Amino acid sequence: MSERKRPGLPITMMEYNLPRECIQNYFPSRKCFTFPFPTAPENVSRLEKLDSADFSSDFLEVTENFCKYAFEKSEVKKLKDGITVSGRVLGHLAKNYVDTISSGVVPCLENAVIAMAKIENEAAVKDGLEIYQSGMEKLKDTFPLELKDVSSEHQHLSSTATQTFMKRSFRDNDGGYLKTLEEKINKLFDEYLRQNEEASKRQCEDLLSVLSGPMTEKLKQGFYAKPGGYELFCKDLEDIVKNYNSQANKEVKAEEVLEEFLKQKSVDSKAVLHADKKLSEKEKKIKEETEKAVLLEQEIKVKEEKQRQLEEKMEAERKSNEERMRQMKEKMDEEIKLQREEAERAMDSKLREQAALLEKGFKEKADRMKEEMEEFKRQNAEAESNRAREFAEMLDNSNRRHEESMAVMMQQHREQMEAIQQTNCRSSDGCCIL
View 1: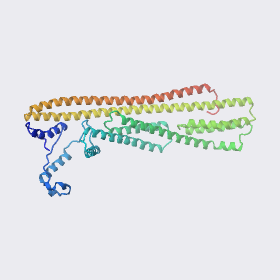
View 2 (view 1 turned 180 degrees about the horizontal axis):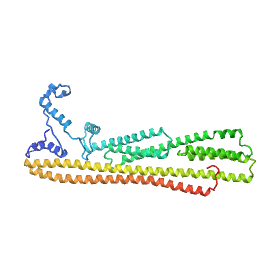
View 3 (view 1 turned 90 degrees about the horizontal axis):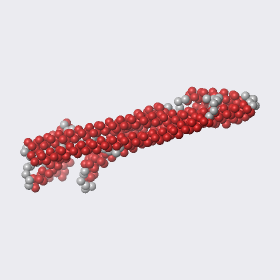
View 4 (view 1 turned 60 degrees about the horizontal axis):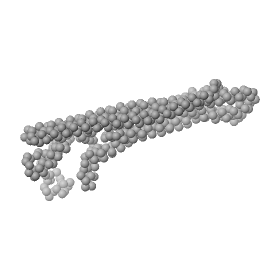
């Protein structure tokens, strides 16, 4: 269809000009082609079966020019807010239009874009999660690891996942999809931490089982059931703990597993102590108090280790949030820049259109277009302001979620500090093992 309008006011002229005016209004930047009738009228019903020779030479020439322009000169298609229309996005739009038209409804670009945004944002969340989960699954093969190593990889993969999401997502105006990604990543992170702890626990238990094997055999054989047996038992236990600490000192469950082991061995220790005829009752009482001190000291170490790990997790969360905020700000700046560039391109086209109208003597239409351009400027300024406000709200919401998460961890931190202080009050000096 040609966009050239005919002058005059009769209804037939207005009807002729209406579609052309719509093209001008809704497509500020455009390149139009007028296609002649493709073939003889009797062939129209079977176009898909015709050979090239059956088509009009004029039609084929215009088609060739159209394709050449589309492939060589046409700019990348963008939505009005500057979002690039990729092949995938164009496919979503085309399907939406076809489905809408097939249902007998007039297609609406805005509704189609909203539907497409939902599809793309859901896919963006999925892409981000796959990046994160794929990397963490590879890391899982090397469990158990120190907490700092797991946290470091989590931060890296979380950042990469967010970046992947940002590249594909658009019109996530309230940040709902980004929030979904954050929550799912955090849930996965907690699960990987649990699996790392389980792997650490198994490895520590296996190590203690090997180290304590000779002692177990001695207990079965009654080796310690003799005068002076308690001293021998303590010496063997000290050696086990010393070797264990040198081999498992970086395991996340090292202290907790050792605490459980010492509790179990305290039963054997009491039996050996009571059976030792070399020690007086007073000496036995002193030894019992010393053993209690050992267990309390280990209990404190367990709590201190949990506190240290919580502090590491809080630091990891802080760094992840900083990186997330940086990426969000970067995306905000980029989207506003694209939106502004698209508006400027549309305005340039309108200015050229106005100049052409003035040159052809359509002063009244040129004046009307000037008013339209002023309205266009106002709408763009409002849209840019609204987008900036939406991004600011997204940043605030993300920060609020971070603060809430940190508040929960801070509460846990305080509770652990109180538990350590209470345990310290119960402890006493002296330790024959640690």
